Amino acid sequence: MKKYVLASLIIFIASLIACTKEKEQIEQDPTLGLIKITEGYANGASAKVVVYCNNANISTGYTRFYLALFDSISGNRIEDAEINLTPKMDMGTMTHSAPYENPSSTRAERHLFPCSVTFVMPSASGNWTLKVDIKNIGAGKTGSFVFPVTVSDPVLSRQKSFTANHNGAKYFISLIEPTKPKVGINDFEIAIYKKVSMMSWPADSSLSVMITPEMPTMGHGSPNNVNPIHIQNGHYKGKVNFTMTGLWRLNLDYMSGTAVADTTQYFDIEF
Ligand SMILES: [Cu+2]
Image 1 (cartoon, rainbow, N blue to C red):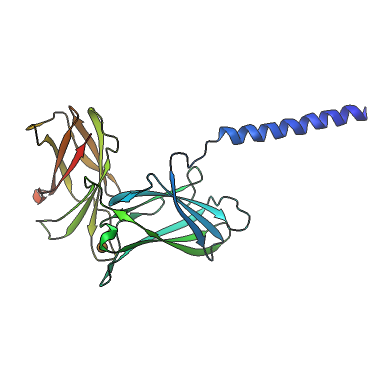
Image 2 (image 1 turned 90 degrees about the vertical axis):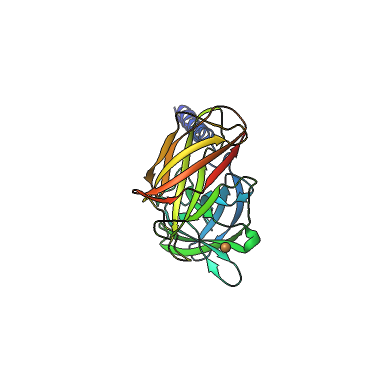
C-alpha cells in the first residue's frame, strides 16, 4: 500500500514538472525580432533595465523602445511600473528635448513596456541621452537610468518640420507607416508634434492632413488614397496606394480649419 502511494506521488510530481515545462515552451520570447540596445540599473528602484528597439541603428524620426524590467536582486521580471521618459539633446550652447510617448499602462504588455521617442536631429548636431524614471510599484521604490543614444539620418528622411503659416508655430511630422511598402494599398500613419518650448513637444491633433502621392520621375499619381485622420495622441492614420514599385513622393498638405498651415513638406519612399 505504501509503495502504491509513493508511486502515485512520484507520477503526480513528474506530471507537474512536465506541465510547467510545457507552459514555458508555449510562451514565446517577447523580445523575439527585437534588438537589445543597452542595459543598466535604475539605482533606487531596485530595477535592472534592458532596452530593446526594432532596429540596431537608430534614425531620426519616430523610434519605438521596449523596456524589460527585472528585480536587481532576484532577477524576477517587474510587471508593474510607472515609467517616465526624458529625451535630451545637448548641443553645447543649448539643450532641448523631443517628442516622446510614455508606456500607456503601468502594467507590462507581454513582459515589456512599449514607449517611443521622436529624434528630431541626428547625433552629428549634439549628444542625445534618454532618461528613464522608474517607479517600481511592487517595491514602492523609484530611481532612474540614463543612457546615450546615437542617432543617424537615413537616406530618405522620415522626419520633417515646418513653421506653420496660420500661427507661426513649429510642427514636427514623423512618418510611421508604411515600414514595409508594397504594391497596392498600404497603411499610412504619421504623428504630429508641436514645439511649444525647448523642453515641451506635445502631440497635436488640431491639423487636418491631405495626402497626394506622385511618382516624380514618371509624372503620375495614384487613385484611392485615404487622407489620414487623427486617431489619438497625435497619430493620424489613412491609406496610400502604390500602383507600382519605384520612387514615390507623398505630398502632404496641412490645414488648420480653412487656413493653410503648410504645403511644402513631403516624404519620399522607394521600394
Ligand atoms: Cu538638437
